[in-house]
Image (cartoon, rainbow, N blue to C red; front, side, top):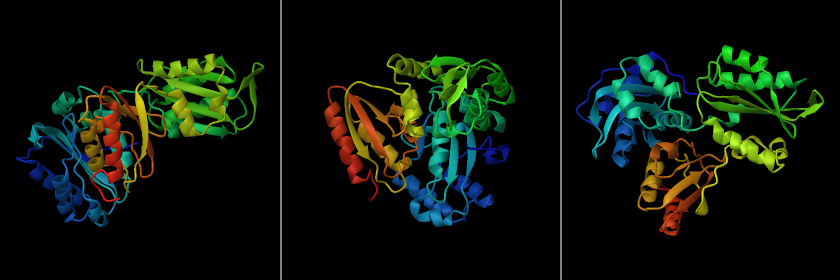
Length: 371
């Protein structure tokens, strides 16, 4: 996860234009030795190519691919503008996040930031932040979650456990590592009785000291038994709200269809798809992203602009089974799509077929970048 400190944030900034703001951000990156002084030219050039405004009062200025050799190490600097900065086209920025990345490391940064900041109501909260800590809380606290956190970092397959309690401890440890729970939550999860859901699947859970609603999944390296019942996998649920209900419905469906064994025979990405499955209606088409640096800001913005030309509701699903609105730049970038990753688009509406055709043509053309 992205780790920030108060030293990364400058509060109560002001700028007469976005160009002035970008120059100040570039200077902050240079002062921290993340970049060379001339990196500012790449940031201004990138902005001229396409606005780095994400929505909800947030912009992410960064350099062009050609100026990556001016990056010494990956880092971010944040400037907070309580009065806002005009970013053009009626868009006002309250938080600008300058990114320096040597390769595609910035995709992980963007994924974390957009995941946290994609919910409604963030813009006003950002404007009212009065301390670096309050900014960090918004960025790292996941106060505005839109979905249960479940990534490959939260899946551990074939762990050499001796019993069910060890599997539960591992599942809790994965969640603690991603700051979803603290030691109190871990202790409660380990000491609370697990529930046998059937077909070898067990459920452990806690609601204590939960910072982020999330699930983890662990399987043993060898067959285990608890009270003469098979232990083939453990789902750990930590819940701070109702977001887990969709995931539990996926579990119920697997149990009802006698398909729980799919979880034990799958890789991490397939497990995530099975436990977060969204089955939207409409017509679908799958396209592969060939942009060398994946869907970073510029190609994402072009893809969103194509989708917005149509009335149809358009959802996009990545290889891990995570779906989001293809017309939302922040939510699209939260998928962290990399080069050669296949995306499935589902369109529902009168012009759905035309929308998918245009999206396919845009992707094939490189989304504004040479292939």
